[in-house]
Amino acid sequence: MTEQPHVEIYTKDDCPYCEMAKDLFDAKGIEYETYNVTGDEERFEEMIERTDGRKTAPEVFIDDELVGGYDDTKALDEDGELDEKLGIATADGGVEHRKLVISGSGIAGLTAAIYAARSNNDPLVLEGDEPGGQLTLTTDVENYPGFPEGISGPDLINNMKEQAERFGAEIKNGVIEDVDDSSRPYRVELSNGDVYTADAFIAASGASARTLGIPGEDELMGYGVSTCATCDGAFFRDEEMLVIGGGDAAMEEANFLTKFAEKVYLVHRREEFRAEDYWIDRTHEKVEEGEIEIIKNAEVREIHGSVEEGVDYVDLVRHPEGYPTDKLDDPETEEFEMDVGAVFLAIGHTPNTEYLEDTVVEMDEAGYIQTVGGKGGGQTETGVPGIFGAGDVVDYHYQQAVTAAGMGCKAALDADDYLETAEIEAEEGTTEAATGDD
Ligand code: NDP
Image (tube, rainbow, N blue to C red; front, top):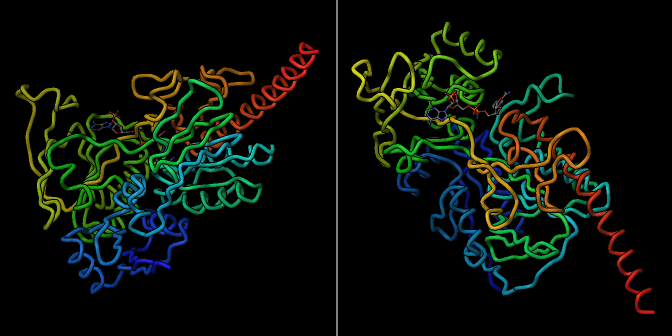
């Protein structure tokens, strides 16, 4: 019997990606050692040294070899290489058939799973790139009905998972690479090579954080640039931090970061915020307390720093009428620099629907799935019978936890109607064929 390799994971408190990394190994039945670096300077320094300067958790090692953060571990898993490293790779090319496959284990996918399991549709939930979805990256969810004191995002997701599994839903680690709708049942291919066929399919794979595409951003991602304040904020304690965006997420992150930061700068590209009044008010309270400074009509053009030292400073532009990068030749456009130790991007999300590109499911330019909508049944149907859409892959407007849950529920009910009708038609088809043969 081959011995299991030595898996080590550096973690920290309040770290959703650390939990996801642990879940990934748990799902494979692999044991690991964890080292929590929160408040443990020695471990923190050890982690930085072993990772050549990375200051973000988790950091995963297999047999003393650095795999990297959660994204790196996940990428390795998707290529099937993680299983090879762990000595659990199989040469199984088998195809498993399922009545219903749900892509995504965020709030829409899990709500769909609860309803589908209760309708005996035996759902398989494939967790996707970000197990648990965006709620696992938030702190307190205060507007989800039924929790007067609020509930943490990860707790809400874990409760839903438990609830779905209680009714028989199966939740598996896996990222869908391609869906083939050219014949029935639909073929669902995963990046690790696994293949499922499915009578019905619910796309609930959510959306991922957008980035700016500016110099320095990619190079310093994980070294002071981050799309998740809850995950990485604590690493930059007592530094000045900059948050980019003017929506609820930017305001929530800026408020959260005041716990650690010397000062938080909130940079927004125009005069008006799109965030709800609640967050604007809370942010202004922090401005009055001197913890947040708002910089309007400004955009970051470049992030400077190094992997060794992290973020050093950023170049910005500002124009009194906003959107300054579109007005670089305007004499009113002012260029300036700011010394900050970390940059957090909170500039919205892009739907995760690439795996549907080869299907005839209709999507708009940004990748949002077109569903029937309206008032009657079948609102979550796409143009392809048996394929449904729910949550942030469809909704570019409301994007709330509770609306995603509502759409997940609708998709499961629509899928149930579809599966029942298909079953009846199949039975009638058999009967007719049998009659015809007589
Ligand atoms: P939003 O799309 O609402 O906001 C994105 C922000 O980023 C906007 O202010 C936008 O500017 C700015 N932005 C986009 N692209 C760029 C760019 N290239 N350069 C500079 N700035 C840019 O996304 P959020 O993630 O904030 O929120 C998404 C949804 O989630 C919303 O429906 C929100 O209500 C919800 N949410 C709710 C929370 C809550 O507590 N209730 C917490 C977090 C999110 P501009 O305004 O000019 O377009």
